[in-house]
Each structure stands twice: as C-alpha cells, then as structure tokens.
Amino acid sequence: MDLSLIQKDILITLITLYHKHSHSIKGEEIADKIQRNPGTVRNQMQALRAIGFVDGVPGPKGGYIPTALAYKELNLNVTAGDYDVPISRDGEIVSGATVQEIDFTTLCHPDICHAEIKLFGSPKLFEIGDRITIGPTPVNKLLLRGEVFGKDESKQLLLIATTEMISLPKQPIKTYMSSPLKTLKISDTLRNALTLFNEERIHGAPVMDKGKLAGIITMSDLAKAIGQDQSLMTKVSAIMTTDVVEAPSDTQLFEVIRRFKELEIGRLIVVENGEPVGILTQSDIIRVFPSL
Image 1 (cartoon, one colour):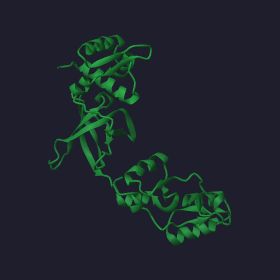
Image 2 (cartoon, one colour):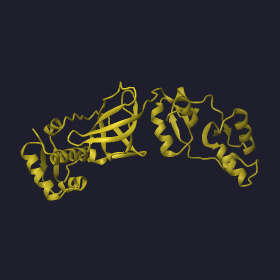
Image 3 (cartoon, helix red, strand yellow):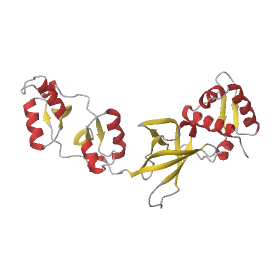
Image 4 (cartoon, rainbow, N blue to C red):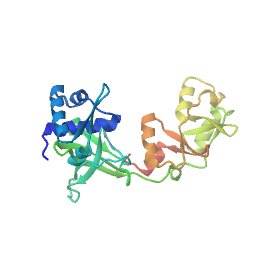
C-alpha cells in the first residue's frame, strides 16, 4: 500500500515514541515531534486506523499504538531481543533514532566510501552536513564515522560519506591492563608517591588500606599539592581521590571507552572478585587503538 509522506512520518514517529516510552502515544505528542497541526495528525490517525496500521487505546491515558502491519509496511523487524545501534552527533547520542541497516554503496571505490543508513526513526532529526558516529554494532563492534550528504525520508535513509570505519577490540580489559598493580599504602607520603611514579614511570597508583582499595592518587594530584606548598611529608590520604572508578576484569574494552569519556577520567582500577588486580589508563587504550 502506498502511504503518503505525512502518513509515513506519523507512523515512524509513533513507532519511535512507542518503543521509547512503552505506552500508547497521543496524537499531540506526534504533532509536536513532526511540527504538524494536531488536527491534521488526528485526521491522518483515523485514516491509518481504518486501514489497520494503528490501534486506538481509549481513556484519559490512551492514545495510539502501532500494529504489526505498520512494521511490515515500513520494512521494520523489531523484536524484544534486538540491539539498538546508536547514532551520535558531536559526541551526543541522538534521541529517537537508531540504525537498522548499513549498506555500503561504494565500498570498492578507490577514493570514496558512501553508505546508506536505514533508520529506526525519522531522517528529519538530521541535517545535511551533520558529522555523525554510528555504533558500535552488536556483533563485530563496528564504529562508523562520516558526514550526512543526503536524506531519503520516504525510505528512512541517511546517505553518509564515511571518513572512518573502526572494528573495536572485543578482548576483555584484563588483556590490556597494566599488572602487577603498583600501589601505595594509606600511610605513605607524597614523597613516597613521587618516588614510585619516577621509578616505575607511571602517572597514577591506587592507595591501599589493609588490603582494601581506599583511593587513587595521580601525578596531577601531586603537582597541584606541591603547587599549593604542601609538604612532601603530607600523607597521600590527604589528597587522594576516594571515589575510585572500578571495572571487572572480564569487561570488554569497547564497553569502558565511553566511561572514560563520560566520566572524564584518565584511568580505572581493574578488579577480580572485588580485589584490585590491575590498572587501565587512557594511554593503554590509545596504544591498542590510536584512532579512538
């Protein structure tokens, strides 16, 4: 059945909102998203309901839900076990859009590599010239970066000129961590920390108290303390960070990359059975994968 562009736009928006909120969606919500008159949306909803693409839910909390026929008409195959492949623009995940398919249209061309991105969501969320990042994908952890140079709203497609394709490492972080762990004691001084950093050529170390992780101290912490004229005999406990970011040793590397960026940290402690066993730094990640 041939749907009009506005009908497809309404259905795409309805499905996107329905999967985001898991409840029926009011026509006014759809109208606000697609910037259409609510009366126009209500009229179109009645038409879509008559041909079986939406169901109405009565009551004050009611609205509309998509039917299986709507998914089929839009060539969407969304199940509970599907993995949402995110799209980011300028480092921020775009809400209301995920990737269903990636089709490389010029993969064998010696100079260019274009891709068609099949969306679950509306292409209207994007503008020509947007620089976007897609992924990682669930199986091969593919990360795709590029620039939007075209859109096909009727087919829910973005046309991308790719600038970079990365297959993220799938090994656990214990493969890349520094071990054995170089540590300081809670009773150690800034002089002890400076000596350890110079001898081991490291820029940070966890602080232990009776075998338990008490905090972490970095070269930046030392430099700040010395700049404030603190004595080198000051205990590391006075300037250490107590809110230490940890990750289990079997965590895959790609899973912690985002944590480094979101938390703005330079290192985290790797643990096994609750015990620190190593440290993973931004430098470790860059050595494994320089383009990240």
